[in-house]
Image (cartoon, rainbow, N blue to C red; front, side, top):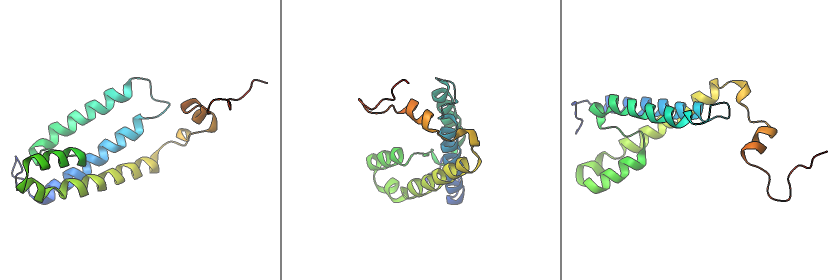
Length: 131
């Protein structure tokens, strides 16, 4: 009802699902050990910027239910009545983006025992001893 570009509810739902799925997919695909240090933040930040530039005219952009909740609480009335759209459809998009990443990720991306120790070292006193 309050779309800046007078888009209908179907377009808003589709935009939230699609852009949230893209965002979660980008986060999952760049948050890997094989990604060069420092590029994950740049990639995610630029993706979020592009998503906002495209989808602000459609529905003022959510892709994050927490952001929508805070905004709706401060606005009140009509924003609270429409809040369900900005909770349900970003969650659906997030699930789809994560599922797509899991379906097509390269087999080399599996976390091996050695790689998991590099990410989260063993607790004090239980470190592997040199042979």
